[in-house]
Image 1 (cartoon, rainbow, N blue to C red):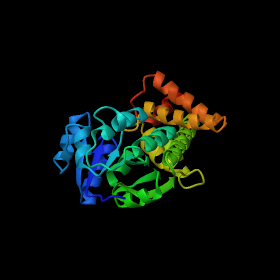
Image 2 (image 1 turned 120 degrees about the vertical axis):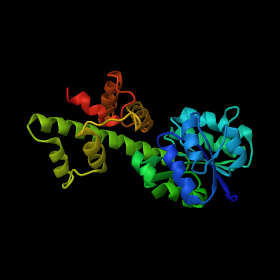
Image 3 (image 1 turned 180 degrees about the horizontal axis):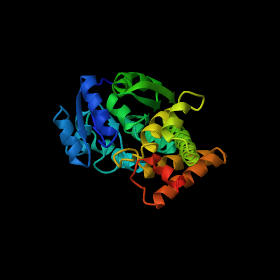
Image 4 (image 1 turned 90 degrees about the vertical axis):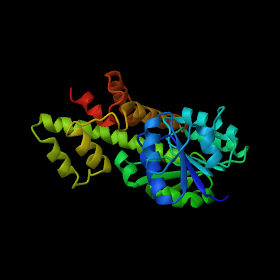
Length: 293
């Protein structure tokens, strides 16, 4: 793999901004970045980010560019559209999508960017916004193993677990299924919480006791105890509509494999109900309100 002297980051949203901040602080490399919103760019520039006005400027200056974007559509545009990474040329030689995107698209982008001399990896992340701030994300990588190893020191600036999952799109498959199980667990927690409260048992007590037994989970200790129990569903976290996008990707994978996935379909319907009820931008554990009615 070619030398890595400079880094880039495109997409400085809820997850991207703290991820970029950790990359800046820990990598000891110059980091160039941009976003359609200027506020996060300015905040990071105050900490040392080389602020860029557009994607082409990042591509001109960075050897490796990390992406953290809302969906595969934006990833494809940033990579291939006019003014995007590939058409702009520059010194960039590797692109890493840390968003949650369709696995099929990852294979297509890998081929299209390879034709232009660029290496492409998918490296979506798991865990919460706080984990992004703390640099303790789990990062699942798809693409060439040698490229994953070359980038491991930079992934390690943002996460504590970095796993090479296979070829192009494999990281996305693992991430999508991780989120599918997370949302399904969230539905089970919401149902248990509602049942307990109606039976006269305190919800916090229920989840604290469950956390000491066989039903313990990351979702229980975080999404259950920190969001569902106190009823805190901020809009600057992972929203319902993003959850719908991810579980839809999981259902697409299920269909491709000939799997009915009845449980995932039930959770998808619950998330859709929350969105129709107006909870589109609230933190996704707000689905408890669809059960506690």
